[in-house]
Picture (cartoon, rainbow, N blue to C red):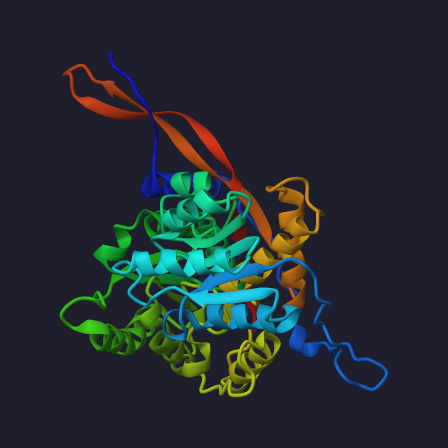
Length: 425
């Protein structure tokens, strides 16, 4: 019998992350509900009634931030600019990866290298798109001491964990439990899950769905799968959105207003939120939790002059929900996860460069940075666990065919999965 040990890459790695939260007999995670959004709390002021200047005095550390463009990810881009404004353009350097990042990895590598050439002692990625591993490896050839923090990753975690010092990633599989818990708290009787075969073939989404089904069974909520058009298919984004527009009323007519609607696809969120408000149904949170994800457009909220102002956004959503007579029926994370990752990543990098961490990977300091940033958004705490991946042995069965057998697990000590309680408006 021949065996070889393999560490499964992205698909199987995500399959077992937070596996306890996905088992039917696992206890339901119930992190404390988020605190009242910070918009309801007066900002601190100095003796003149002005908000205090948070810009720090000049220091000798330099941190680089790599984000998408405004078209790829406005939240990450704005978070990078926020860090530059707070700490100073002499200490925070920002670059963007190309919109066509899959086809232009050399451009991403060149952008990251430019940060190192300008003296960056730490580099924070969000999102860590394809090309991140190659970028880190290329930079380390010349600058081996740079600290790398990678967030919202798109490359195999077991490989990236060997390249980056710290990985911060939303716990999408654990959300299978917490999303359904939020639906239960709102009084949901039915949960509509919109997706399509391409998405359900992505292991992270498939495992989150498994967690949703298990939690729904425990909580007595009817789980209903609805196949929607793929936005990359013949009908395109417009066809997928039109399907949502037409189907939400049908589902409410069939299942009643105490129905929570969830979609795995970003492009569907705006018509989904609008449909929920029009029909008086329920909405637990978007596929990518953030007050900025589809809510402004769906609720006709202008962000002009308040870009990146999360307390403002939470307050405006609360007002819009109340005006629609939907208080208690709409929820979301009160902290935009990618902004949290960038700001906490910078906070941790500063602590490391100032000698306030226990080595390059200090779990306690990472948690402190995440909680410190979350508190700025009115959230008492976010919760992290390390990523766990399976150890697979390839064995021969009785017929001589090779089969995969899980024989153990390995913890990625430098990969931290993030989850937050939801705020019900």
